[in-house]
Length: 331
Ligand code: GTQ
Image (tube, rainbow, N blue to C red):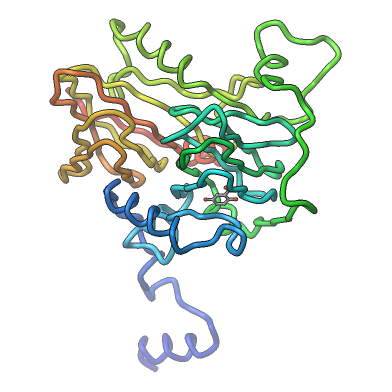
């Protein structure tokens, strides 16, 4: 018997020898999606996709190297809710965040009985299995980035979804509830009941922190970078991923590094370049892009003003599983 005969014999029985090298799973490739395309697609969806039939009106990124999803773990979509519209209440195991692109104090994400206003640059979490729905009570359309660990959760076979009995859940908590009970003076008798509490990180505060730190050294690989922490534990935003924001100062060029975690970015303010394994990804405001695992990368701001990137990194899941590894390019 030849080795190839054996390979065939085994294959017919859904068996395979270690020596028989087959292509592995598809690898995530670096890719950039233009805001102009996303926006045009979303605006058209606003005309032809009815919210009552579909539940959510989003345009999803799809990585050209994958059958579905922006990466193999973290996924981004952009959602549009027009004036007066409701995105009905549901919950799922996949944990989500909203990062507001165009907001209003009269547009809300309601999570577990609290309404969180969605203003530009705000980050709002809807952790694993929390009820959530959206309502635009303003007279302008609102848009935001949805970030989810849905690909990872689906791969691991743990994706459950449930609809709320009504279209909207009742608002039962006072405005500002989470930020108050998780502030610096906390009630003695109360716990939130969530290890990852639903929370709103206001842009006003995040931006003020970035500006306060502008003159300091910063992170060698990422400039003035902040992590949005779980207000309960001080750990990452959510168990599976960390939301982060970074300001690159005028003419700042960061050092190159690579890590086994995967990162998705949104160019929140300004334009610049991220070099990924020698490929220059030139981004403009609103563009979204991927830095795949174990790819050398650095960022460049060639302008005379600040630029800001929002990103989601899956390092918490990689660290929890003992799979995180990082390497810096020597200077
Ligand atoms: O708005 O709740 O992009 O449940 C994907 C799943 C958005 C949402 C998405 C969701 C939502």
